[in-house]
Image (cartoon, rainbow, N blue to C red):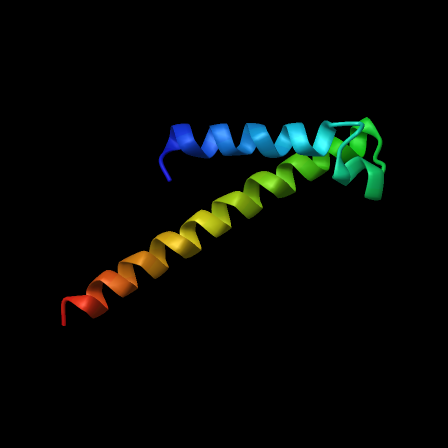
Length: 66
C-alpha cells in the first residue's frame, strides 16, 4: 500500500469510527477525547497490517522463485 492508499484507507476508517449512526458508535459510544486515541490506534493497526501483508507477499514471491 502506498502513502496515498494508506491515508485514503485511514480516512475511511476515521469516518467509520466517527459516524454517530455507524456500527462502531452503536456498539462502543465514545467521547471526542476517546475518539482521538482510537484514531491513533487505528493508524498504527493499519500500518502493522500493511507491513504484515507486504512481508507475506514478499515471502510468497521468494518462495515461488525457488
